[in-house]
Amino acid sequence: MKKILFIVIDGLGEKPIPQLNNQTPLEAATTPNLDYLAKNGVCGVVQPFKFSWQPYPTSDVAHLGLFGYDPKKYYLGRGVYEVSGIGMKLKEGDIALRVNFGTVDKNLKIFDRRAQRIEDTQPLVKSCQGIKIKGVEFILKKSYGHRAGLILRGKNLSPEITDGDPHKIGVKVRKIKPKRKSESAEFTANILNQFLEKTHKILEKHPLNKKRVKQGLLPANYLLVRGAGQLKKVPSFKQKYGLSAACIAGGALYKGIAKVLGMKIIRVPGATGKPNTNLKNKFFYAKKFLKQYDFIFLHIKATDNLAEDGNFLGKKMFIEKIDKKISTVSKLNNTLVIVTADHNTCSLLKRHCNGAVPLLIWGANKKDDVSHFSEKDCKNGMLKKIPALNLMKKIFDWQNF
Image (tube, rainbow, N blue to C red):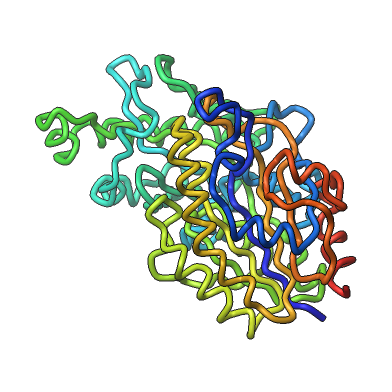
């Protein structure tokens, strides 16, 4: 049976861009190696999973869909994946949230959701440690950049609470509210609001923030929380598919999803989840660990980041950078290589957007007529359109070719 290298290029596809002669960054990019894999493999498109109430797919839900885990049954809340991905240990009953260090004015109106993408938050994190409210312990840990993870540990807690982050600037932070009338949800919302008030006062007076203001920088003076979740048992990838699996990723979310699914996290020097990530090392470690594992999930993040910043030229150039480093996978033996995306990210909208994502499967000794790896070309491939939840089954169908 063939090994599987499952490459997810985050936010890869999108709509055509006038400044690129009405091509997408992927269509405009020079990609001889991805084209080689497409030409010598089979192609199609994947319809990302999203909940009916979502305007467009989110990374957490979309990845669960790609792995064949129905989010309607297995989604635990974004916070669980984020805190797991940065090495925080969750216990039964804990509530997990993802956090941004943001900037608010004296009226709690949001000026910047990322405090100018502050990097050095460790002193701020330390100042917010050791807080207990009504028997509940609040544990905060730095993630990368402006991000952090938060765990609430105690009794009578519920993940059924709203976000404090409105995902907009120029509006006030939201009070945390219970999503339903229950004693535990109301208690959780109440103590979290108290924690956020307390930490805001601490951060306002923190020497690092005072120094930033003197330097003309924005203070990181508020914790914007969202994505409350609670750990539950989920069948491991090994239990579900009978395959030993490992993950190579820079971003905390993707490592967290992999951990929850029981995948081994492979630490790769220089894997950052940013445009400066060491792609050469990622592919080198993937090849190395395919000798040990049946399935390697290799995640590449920066395509999504660049599109969310509106940098379509940067996205095009980063796709070309991926293409140069991905050439090594064509030398793999007895391996099925999958290249796809979790969702589209549109540079002109600066956000995720709807639409099917390109897919190629190489190594199955089958070909179709697609010669260029792109959104438009892959639609004409032999695989046609596959709902994300059916992708793993389709991969296993091709594993024996």
